[in-house]
Length: 150
Image 1 (cartoon, rainbow, N blue to C red):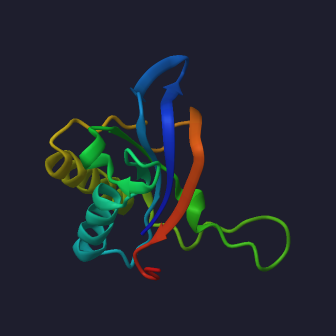
Image 2 (tube, helix red, strand yellow; image 1 turned 45 degrees about the vertical axis):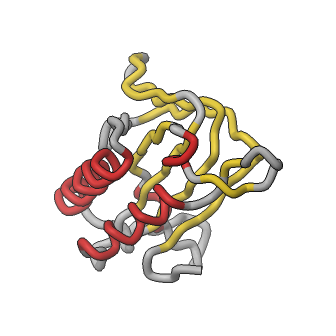
């Protein structure tokens, strides 16, 4: 499982000219799922997202999590995080989980985030053509990978 995490001042996702999810200050998550992902990957990622200290404390040091700041989380499915581009110039999506598998795992991940954060987690629409807008705060952008935790 891969998550591109961005600390944002605000973010939103639009599908067919309708805003389907938006947040104020918090985290925008672009989420990629591969067939090898398990419940353990979801649990690890949920804990990492909720507890990662990327928000500043009173001394200006990144020492607070989204949980501590009361920030919000917006989750957007992003199969292209598993794009392979070694051969040629057209990416291959073979490493991304197929929709029937990825949809269930994405929904489970959002449910875990909601339970752990104690707040609803708005989302995009799985498989839709989405327009994501954000104001990156920092900028702070991290790539998290449950198979390669750094």
